Length: 314
Ligand SMILES: C[S@@+](CC[C@H](N)C(=O)[O-])C[C@H]1O[C@@H](n2cnc3c(N)ncnc32)[C@H](O)[C@@H]1O
View 1 (tube, rainbow, N blue to C red):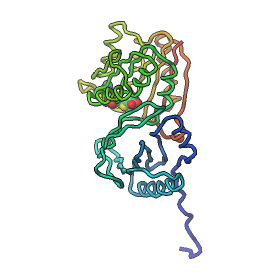
View 2: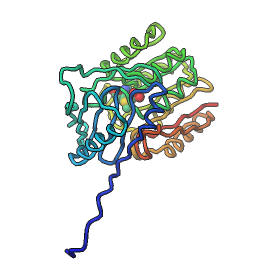
View 3: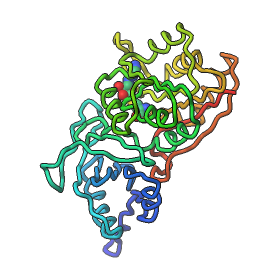
View 4: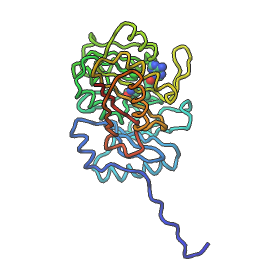
């Protein structure tokens, strides 16, 4: 090698929030947000704690070093830091590992978003309980003040909680009874009386068919399916192939002027592709709509976070 040749120093592709940007988020009553995002992983602040989610050890070490200098700059120290490995196969996921802090503290914690309380389980291997990239969509649903909301693939029911706090009656459906129970806990955390809210452990497609047969109508519907899934009966679901079936079934229970949130993590479906498919379904069902792309919150740089689109029926 030419002795005068020196490789250029590696430039990190991690994007960190500035402490000033974080102060703006916190001033809005939010204690759970991303601190950094990059191709090898991301860093989330969850109240007093931080989770570093990483694909490879080098990315983990880079984020850990970045977090130390970020904290020195911001004058803030997390109570605990967890490291969470994100293997290629979801089935290989394991619980986050405590890297620093008190091991006797509980793994459950409560964070706020716009002052709304959500219970998290830091020890969970899949997700801690709140998808932080949906912050703008939760705020939008709240601002719509819908009367009747159907939250499909509801997980821990965060969309139902904001809708209920805005005065809506809600129906939350998810295959996982355990996730719905966590949703109920979120209702309790926010002192919401459950009497106008139902939590149904079922397959979304089956529930949509039942609701349509009963003539039920909703004025907001959340469709945020996983990329892959299996129905109760073992039928394979793939969002790319079944998106139109899902939206068609949702349109059958959509009241006039219903607002439908379409959301996916499938990289092949960006918001423009979602809009193209939604327009096709609307045409087939003779419904007209306006389409609104909110994008992702400031702590999710381009290429990070779900693709989402609001279909506002006329
Ligand atoms: C991406 S998460 C939804 C996140 C949720 N919208 C939120 O923002 O918190 C996907 C959820 O869909 C549920 N699920 C998967 N297949 C399903 C099906 N066929 N019917 C109903 N729920 C299903 C999973 O149990 C999981 O909770």
